[in-house]
Image (cartoon, rainbow, N blue to C red; front, side):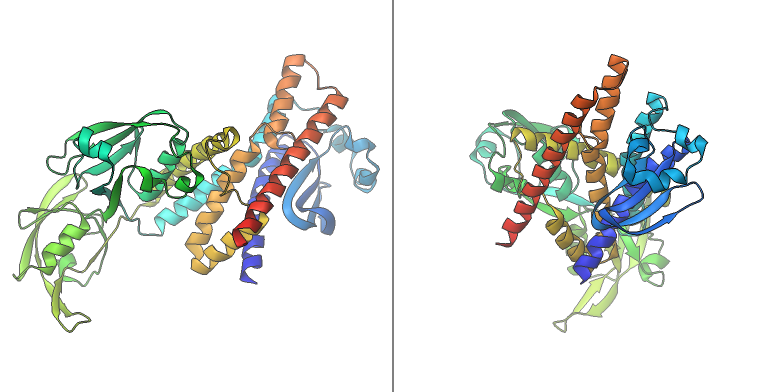
Length: 449
């Protein structure tokens, strides 16, 4: 039951936000709206407001729509009841009567609403969670190319993939998948752990990641294995701890302990576990200012009954609301661009379609993330909101992007597209969307077989 309920909440919010974007901009431009529906098909519940707009809940939770008053809707017998409730002024406020730029903004408003929702969700997640920041360290070199032709050394840090900064596994995967189908040079940037000097390696590839199995874990096919270590940044610290009383604070970066360089949180743990003294001298960086602290060690008994020393901190990074909003906006932009790139690569065959999900897959993802917790569920909602926004901007008839194409044709011709051509345009769009849905459902079913 949790799976179905979670999916209904997830889809309901995404659809409502998308359609509300169209709705509110249409109302700002005084276009009469005769129906706002969540869901498709037969109307289950409806209520008409003082503006003459029917708010409806329809039977099939697979979409929604905002029905603007158009010249065609006047002739539609199904709308006779709504038309009778409209004033003479409302009947004149058709969609076609508005300037093209206003109609274009109405079409754009749905996807924009989805992007704004994603920014808001990401901001909430970043502000209310401890962000783990990683160091992608080269653990083992497996390719003869790197061994014989490059200066790559175990312990060096992967910093860039094709000019894009990478700091965690998700970013590495996204950038590698963006290079799928590449024939030429894959540019990898590294930082030497010996002297911190940056350097690049050009890796010759031919139809990179052409095998769809490789695309499931592209980081395993770079020619070296990575160990994702944690940045030595204080994420959590108890206010009654000796470390806090000594001046250590959240977001402090630990640079050295007793003159020993600390490159990762694992380095710090290793040093502390073998330390025999009563206190340590810690060099930290706080807001670009270097400071030195003396921190008394704490002791506790571990599961093996042995006494071990510890400082009492958890690694991570805590963002302010302003920083979370900026990060949320960047994450939305980056994932939107990546989604568009991946759609293009799927179309030309450089990227497999095995991860394309339909309603069954969405129900499963919604249930799985809901069981994992509220923030994972919100994260999935943000990802799907971005996908919904990007896909609706594709130039496919019946989608918002297709409507924008029609407005562009109208601007070039000076008049709307002929009705016969417009009908064929819409028919091709429904066929394309229908085929995509069938394929996505087939993908979902095949995963359970």
